[in-house]
Image (cartoon, rainbow, N blue to C red; front, side):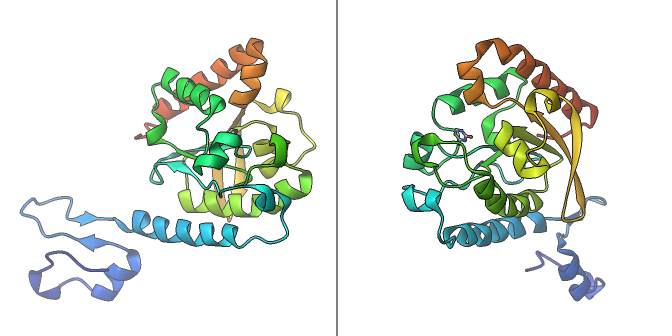
Length: 234
Ligand code: URA
């Protein structure tokens, strides 16, 4: 890391500044001299490494039949991370999550609570399209949840939104029902860190079951309320 415009005769300990990931910027202003840019820099490197790990997965039916790896979309600095199930046909073709019909609905759902998809971070449990869009098997969910956990640790969101039962099962196991668990704030611990989590219905499910949208709307309002309560900058 380089220290920008540092002067003042090295009164700061360079090694310590580097260790803390702090970039020192000299300014005539008496405050805000320290700007911590490190997390973003580290994230892109760590995300690239994680992507390579997923590219190297072997003996996986999903990977073998998919055209592309679908890693993520959105802003990696966002405090909000959304996890879906897995890529569909369009996502597989474009290598981007939530770009088909479910993605269009997701965009509208976010807009309804004044969020833009470019300001959140979006990924899926499995990063390769399941054949014929089948639900990923438990063994596949378990296998990919290891990468998902790493992904969450890197993004380090304040609010984690799990859309659909696959995302729920990846972090909470398959002994619970989404109809009972959605809409409540929960905590999930990954790598010794606790993440505030909301389980809600998947947009693809809402496209099939329009009468469930009222529950989804209630969940979205809860999420908006929490964003305001904790003064989350988005
Ligand atoms: N459904 C998902 O779960 N993820 C996508 O990326 C698209 C559809």
